[in-house]
Each structure stands twice: as C-alpha cells, then as structure tokens.
Amino acid sequence: MEFETYSLGELYDVASGLSKSAKEFGNGGTPFVSFKTVFNNYFLPDEIKDVANATEKEQEKCSVRMGDVFLTRTSETMHELGMSSVALKDYPTATFNGFTKRLRMKSDCQVKVYPRYIGYYLRSREFRNQIDAMALLSTRASLNNEMIGRLTIRVPDYEIQKKIAAVLGSLDDKIELNNAINKNLEAQAKTIFEKELCLFDDVPEGWVKSNLIGIADYLNGLAMQKYRPKEGEQGLPVLKIKELRQGICDANSEFCSPSIMPKYIVEDGDVVFSWSGSLLVDFWCGGKCGLNQHLFKVTSAKFEKWFYYAWTNYHLEKFAAIAADMATTMGHIKRGELEKAEVLIPTTEEYHRIGSLLAPIYDLVISNRVENRKLAELRDSLLPKLMSGEIEL
Image 1 (spheres, rainbow, N blue to C red):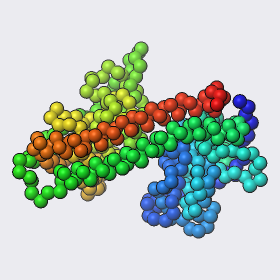
Image 2 (image 1 turned 60 degrees about the vertical axis):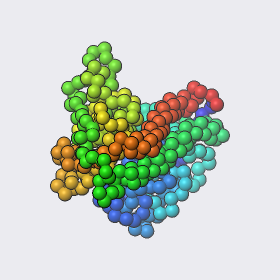
Image 3 (image 1 turned 120 degrees about the horizontal axis):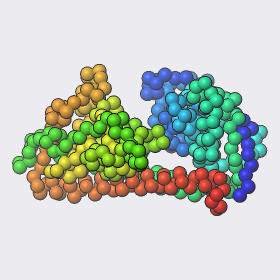
Image 4 (image 1 turned 180 degrees about the vertical axis):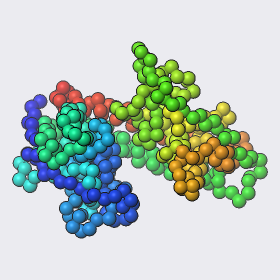
C-alpha cells in the first residue's frame, strides 16, 4: 500500500477556541466542544452536552463544521496531549474550548482526506509518537499552532482511506449500538425498580424495612501504593475513581501485586461504589483489577446483585444532596449514611418475581459493556496495522 506524507500545516488552518471558565459551561448558550469531549471521543457525539455562553462573533470565529479536526493542545500528562476528535457533521451553533485546537481544511487544499480515516489516524501510535517526541522538546506539555503545523500524517489513496475507516468504523458502530441499547435498558430497569419497590404509601404486608448495610457488604479498597508488584510478578491494573468513571483501565493506570487478598480483586460484573470524590455506583466491566481505597466493592451473601445494586443506585441522589448541604465532597459521606439509607425487602415470592424482571436486564447491560471493551481492544489492535499497511485490505 502506497502512502503520501503531508504536514498538517499543508492541509489545515489551525485556530484556537474560546477561553471560557468552567462555571460558564453549564449556564446555557451554545453547544460547547470541551477538552473532555475531544479526549473521550474519536468523533464528536451527535449531542454535545457541555454548553457555554458565546457571542455571535465568537460563534462565527469558533464554529464547528463537518470535517473539522480537534486536538487537545495542553495537558498534565503526555497521554492527554494531542488527543483528537473529528466532526462528522455540521454543528450550526457549536463552539469549542480554548484547551483544544481546531484544524479546518484549507479552502485551496487539493488533497482528498476522509474525515473518519483522519479520526483514526490521529489516535494511532504512529501519530502519537510524534506528539510524545514534541512534548519532550517543550518546556511544558502544550502544543502551539506552529508545532501542530509541523506534525505529519500519512494517507493512502482516498478509496483505501474509506475502506480502512469502514473496517474500524464497523466496530465503533457496534459499540455505539450497544451503548444505545444499554441506555434504554437502564431506563427500563429504573422504571421497574421504582414501580415495584419504592412507590408505596405503606409497607406491604410481609415486607421488611432494612438499610444498605443490612443487605450488602461495602468493602473499602486498599492503599495500593503499598502493594506494588513484586519482582517477577505481572501486575494487575489498579481500579481508582478515574478508571471507574471512564469504564476502563488505560495506559496511565497504576499496577498492584496480583497476590493481594482475593476479596480486593474486582472482576467483570462486580458492583463498585465510589464514595469519595466523584459519586458513582456502577457495574465494573473493564477486566480484572485491584480495588483502590475510596472505592467500595459491594457484595452480599443474602441477596442477588440486581437487588443491592439497584438500592445503592437509588440512594445516590440523596447522598449527593447530603454532600452538597455539607459543602463538602463525597469523602465525608461515611458508613453511617449507608445505615440511614432505608431499603425495603419484599417477601420471598415477590423478591423472585421482581428479580426475574430486573436481573436479565442488568445481565445484558454487563454483557454489552464487556463486549464493547473487547470490540475496542480489537479496534485498537487493528488500527496500527491498518495505518502502517501491515494488514492489506
């Protein structure tokens, strides 16, 4: 496969975004492409959740069009620097963040590049190596317009670009389909849980009042810096709040010894609750790892996963309100709050009936998430081989 090499400066005009403060993101206004949006997505999502107030002049200067490429220009780690995302449609009123750079195809450019191919190429190790090398030459982890213009890309024939993007895109399309299915399933589960277990004026006959501590064990993790891999051991990734929030361990995740006590090892499908910092309870589907402090691994010898997950999730909003009232973080929500969080335990017959409705839903959510992780791993293993020509189409 033959490639042509171009500098980004030959193909694109580079522009800076809006310098808006974080508190302006949620104050209404226009859709706002933030650092985290670019970092977390190969391609800009159809619905941009962040917003920022922007004047008409700012909207015109910092617009987002189909084919625009975004690079994170600054970061605390080299891994975050130069992460990319591509717009696959026009966003009529959207603006973008000052921590990113926008690359827009030059009006007189005669080179044909396929946006989805560029999206994948800029996430490839081949391109990332350039970013890493450039960061080492910089006094701080930041990219200016001139530096971005010197970065190079290799592109094959336009039709080959489309075929490569189609192979990788088919995996991402399946991931997005699974995400959409899970969003619907989780909404169904929430409705069923509240209808079957919460919407009562009086406790039904035979049902028992309890609390979260009464139905599940909340195991706090270890200070994993004390449990590093020993010589000759292949370490386990450490599950921290960051990993729980993003759903996977990544290149920046720390490692711990695999010889830690088994109860501190987390497997796919385990329920994990972050009680410090970011408030979140979720099914972990990111593979085997070690549980760090500030996270609870939730289990029960009495009740099934659907039951203690749903009740823990049900009380999150109340926990958040407690933290807000105390003007503090979740680090100050203690086990005492779990004891105060009321739970209704139905009769055995009702427990099994409700479980027959909810357990299959949660099992499918977990299955889809594990499949997504494996699809992403396949995509990421194919990507460098397709981009380098090691695999011929």
